[in-house]
Image (cartoon, rainbow, N blue to C red):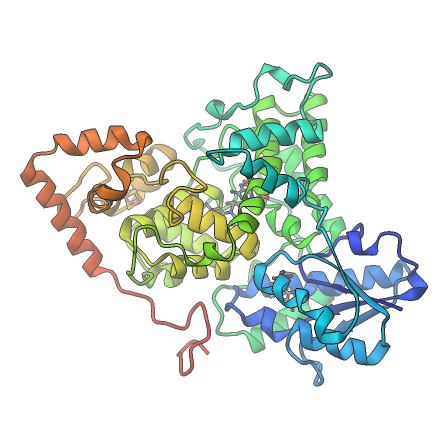
Length: 523
Ligand code: FAD
Ligand code: DLZ
Ligand code: SF4
């Protein structure tokens, strides 16, 4: 008998560990365990999503003729960890071998690698082929490059998949990348329709009650929980995205509009990352819509680049850089995370709206994550480990493999530029160009100093000044340093003082929000 554990982000019927297996000879194991629900204090919506999707998936597996052991969080015998529960299943079933798809997170993969010795059984750990680029291919690509630029990886991926590739092996439309068409400022009006909602069914309502009890002090609200929890719902969201939002996805990819929580984004990451959808089916849907003439090329190409380019590159970088990636701190930043990341209580309209979206939906779109909240944390010199913990807690799509490289690499430049060629640092001018936030803000985006000056402005110049030794040599920062050099000494002193006063005025978050701390008020 074969024991096949399936982790909470492996909820895919075509999972490698299920292929070619005789159903009568296998026992599948899904485990709700305290270690996973609390290794960080996840947003309530993330716990509801995973547990509800696991429960629905187990039912579908049984309907398909599999024998499934399902361990619930409130089972009195529950050992609280994957290893503890696999040990119990080994006792129950005396399997001849264990078969599992590799984990998405380093700490879980290390635990699995210890199982063979621990249980005295063969453990077959299979590559996760829901990702398009096998890890050995990614490592070979990385070894052949001096700089690990995403664009060159992306072109290889286009050829590998044949997506938007013509029979003569050239890119559809003649260009690989239409990014220059994808930087429009926000539209005047909100999109006509929000993404389709999937109201909680009985299973989800039961999990919501569990989470509102056991995890009531975790961050976030559940009132608007409406995420897909089955593959069928995820496919419905994909169809809704392709017809309603994909046509404008490319053009407004970098835009922000106050109160428009999803704009023209897909909202598919939660379904993709727990396995309800595969990246390839999303890309094929976008490509087919382009060929039917329903979406422009810049939109289809833009989405495909996010999916087979960025998403896969980020995953490859995680496994290339771990375990060291967890520890990086290029700027040696030590400041505590501000309290407003948890409360949203700040006069900075851009930050307040981004935190509100995060709290209410366990979501923020890419530019809110990168150029508002990530940018602020880097400019303010926040300890990157605290920033990474916050991102891992608050987003329903967050798993370390995707969160760490995006946060520590792309957004905080804490890896010193392994992933990005320059820090994504921007002053208020960038946020003003790409959003309507500044119009309703108490700060004046045009001012650098003074009580009502936009904090991003002084912080931006102070960041460049503070980190001059580490950054001046970066050829992509030549222009901002040339501008800084033209500031009069008095102006520089005023900017430094403005930044210092603002940073001193920020309330730090109490410990205990992200990770359990004994005696914390959030327990
Ligand atoms: P869309 O804008 O509709 O994009 C479509 C899809 O492209 C996404 O669903 C996602 O699967 C993929 N994608 C786009 N950009 C990236 C990227 N940089 N990395 C990986 N996939 C990408 N994404 C996560 O899935 N989990 C995270 O924990 C996460 N943390 C992030 C932290 C920071 C600081 C930043 C800057 C980005 C982070 N991202 C993360 C990437 C991106 O912001 C989200 O994938 C996206 O906002 C999810 O919303 P969506 O599905 O509406 O995306
Ligand atoms: C995120 C999460 C949560 C909150 N709970 C569980 C759980 O109870 N059982 C489970 O199998 N998975 C859960 N997950 C997802 C896991 O953390 C994820 O599968 C691993 O981190 C991948 O290595
Ligand atoms: Fe954000 Fe500054 Fe604009 Fe206010 S003025 S919304 S703080 S960028």
